[in-house]
Image (cartoon, rainbow over all chains, first blue to last red):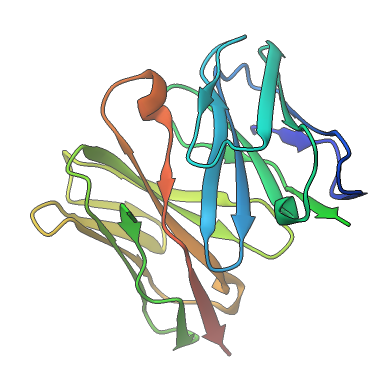
Length: 111
Length: 115
């Protein structure tokens, strides 16, 4: 079974802090994704990566950056956290056009 | 511009009956469609997918139907069980590699199966 592990289930940070969300997958998938889920808005893609050191913007990249130095790890960075970035963050990975497999999410609160 | 639409925010059915969840899309480049189930405080779980070369795919109690001319797909759950109560997301992706591996999700439908 594919295992996608997100480093924290719950995180509380302050406005202006730099925040790192980490995601690791164990199935050698080349594609990795970061989404945020908000009530009534579904899942919205922030960034994705289809190879090491490669990244592409998704639908809502503003205020975020990503890092993929190793194939198994994809990090989401909030450069200067703001209250409107309070959300559930979901990481996923996939092999080619196969289904994306998701982690359990990080519920991030920015105070 | 919502390219994948789930027009019913919620659906309630009785245990043992059929649940039908609907999804419409607007982008004619979409050729691969998926359904995910999500429980609260968990990540989405992949349920079933269908390629545009097919019009039906079955996996146990779950069947997905695709009507390309109407740009419509549906997920049928028969028989419905209380454990099926969750939010269901429809998702789609387009042809080619690279950025076409990304999925576009609908906003989800909350299914409640009553005992």
